[in-house]
Length: 259
Image (cartoon, rainbow, N blue to C red; front, side, top):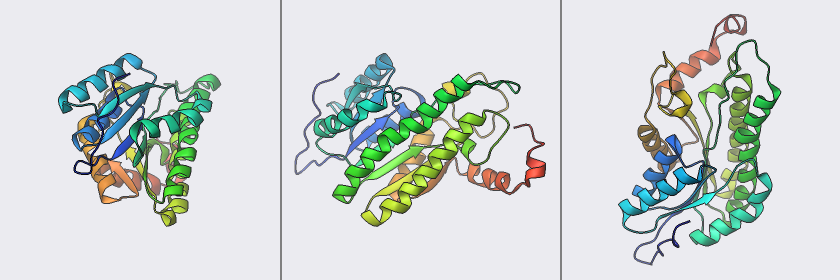
């Protein structure tokens, strides 16, 4: 772990953020985006070496300690209760919380693998709940804050490929909408992010993927959505149109499709 955060002053106030799932790909890009905007950031991941390298890179670029790395496996649900207060104490407050952790275990068309499906549900959905519940309680108590969940276009409709992954993201999108409806009246904003294909390890080696977006471009789009107060954002916007069409396809046709 790095040295304590650079302390803000009345002339140089700092917003504070927690980013769960920060070590590589989209998470690393979001971390760099937030740092460029002047945030102090607590970076969490189970990939401790990548996380340490990322925080060192960010701090070297900033010329001060604006990022600190914390090891955390999101399947260790019970440690959130003590870890969250510690992070808020280290940061000196909290303005923004982003849950980006997620895994996609590939399954063959004829395969039904409970252990694989369970792991995706635990990481993508239950892991998110373990964080969003206490963060929502904190933000509700102070009457402000911004919660962001990285869902996926895969959750917009049940498809024949990777059903558990789609279910985990559909559940996450639904939970975020519920939080939004509950917390907006309390002064808390909630953003659901639905990326399409991103140029990350998750899509590495796959062919025929449309409208691929770089992590840096995706992070910039997410930042813009946060600042504009959007409720849902597709990354990139073309996916909003694509998924509207997908949702409108009648079921008797959709079930015959191969994606």
